[in-house]
Structure formats: structure tokens, C-alpha cells
Image 1 (tube, rainbow, N blue to C red):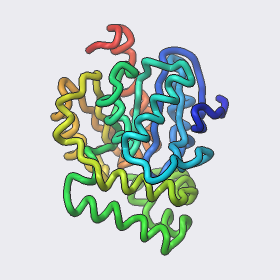
Image 2 (cartoon, helix red, strand yellow):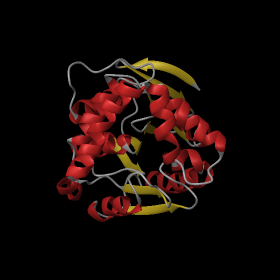
Image 3 (cartoon, rainbow, N blue to C red):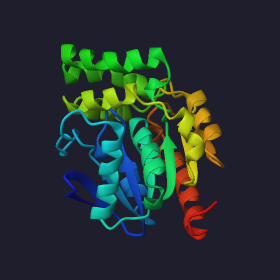
Length: 265
């Protein structure tokens, strides 16, 4: 596994095979995908980014909109000669991945949306809650913010080491990166556009997800033509970290089918 910078974005890059690009959630970083970088690299070139404004990646200029993050993904794919790629996004990363599928379907082999949503802009309550996080981060600072928010991401009874990792990653978030991500989430609602997605899609969700929830993942699967959904038992909002064996198995089966059939279901 190596760390490199491409198109002004830091990535972790491991393995060989058809590319699988991983986009972390709003409180994460590339390291959130350690279990996928190690567990799927036997069959795929697995690439996990630090989103702009996270980890080692500088912020996008100004006040970027969702399209700017989607464009950054495509730039990374091209910079790594990784088109077309399987694209997997967790939570906020899934919202970015959805926009990539809408804007640049030719860049993708498949789409995997994990514990994700149509965007927080779907309801007034969602918009307000997402926007409020920015003020909370400023008031409390990253460490206290992470200590209060992170435990809710995992299912009750989750491995304490996993919860510790989630807290550690969230404690590294910074402004303006987190604020830009929260603003993008608060202003996004993909509900009316899901039917336009032509990329083969798998939706994965922890059956105890208390953040975006199973119902929201089912709405994604129902809205995207021919999408499939897999629920991961015993997992919360961080299914890829909490239940990596089950998560990786579901993803591997889907990607293998796509690759075997030449990019179609």
C-alpha cells in the first residue's frame, strides 16, 4: 500500500486489478477503509481518497458545491489511469459518488452506496441538523466534537477498537473542509435524479444504522433502476469498519459479477 498525491488529492493505493475507488464519510479519511484496502486488494486495485479538505488533501477553492467534489473524483480517476472504476462511497462519500454517476457515467463500472442517503437537503429537519454541525464543531473543537458524535455511528455493542478508530478519525476533521462538506450535504437532494442513474448499483447498509438508516438506503435502492440492496447484520452506520468481512464479501460478489459480465447486470 502506498500513499500518493494525484490531482491535488492524497490517496492510498493498493493491489492490482479492476479499480475500486473508495470515498469516505463526512467524519472520516482514507484510513477508514483499511479493511477494504487490505481485504479486497487481491482482486482489485483499491484506491481510497482523502477528500479535499480532509487528511492530506488541501481544500477546494472558495465555497465548493457538490459538482466540484464529483469533478475531483473524475480527475483522480484520470490521473491514476483508473477509468472506468468501481466507485464506492460511504455516507457523504455516497452522495458524491451518486453525483459522479449522474455527471460522468462513462467513468464508472459500478456504483456502491454504503450507509448513504439522497442528501440532507431532502427535509427541513435534515438541512437544519447538518448545518448545525458546523457551529458545534467550532464551539467544541474536533476532539470533543468527535467524542460526542462518533459513538452513535457504530451499532450498540460494537468492538471498542472500532469505535476508537472512528473517534480518532473524526477528531482530525478541520475547517473549512468539514464545513464545506456539511454545506454540500445540507443543500443536496438527489431524489428526483435517482431514476436517471444507468450505472449498475449496489446499496449496502448496516441493519442498525441510526444515522441515515435502513429506510433511507431502501429509498436509494428503490429509486435507482435495477439497484440491489444488502443489509449487514450487527452493523451500524460504519458497516465497512464494524463488519468488514461481511461488507467485503457483499462488495466482492457484486464487483465480480459486474466484471464477469463486462460492466452490466
